[in-house]
Length: 124
Image (cartoon, rainbow, N blue to C red; front, side, top):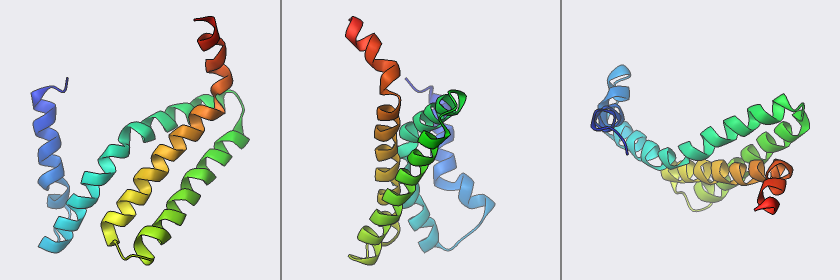
């Protein structure tokens, strides 16, 4: 459950806090709010990927980290081309491509650390 004060702060930051720091036209503000509205759904995946990346680095698995980052970025680039250049979805297309890339990155990150999870799953 999100505390009410945190929900109010999040809404105010989303609706005007960031825009107040860098004023823009109404069109840019509208596009920015649409972008953030889509991208916010990728926050859990991004935070989880950060945690798994740290864990992989601690295990000295730098190649896995590199593979993970390449995977996320290549999916993002490919989907940007697919969503923006081909059908012309613009800013919402960029945000959606990034969102999908973040969640695809989490799937790969979980797969990369499957060896740590499998013994625990087998014992239950």
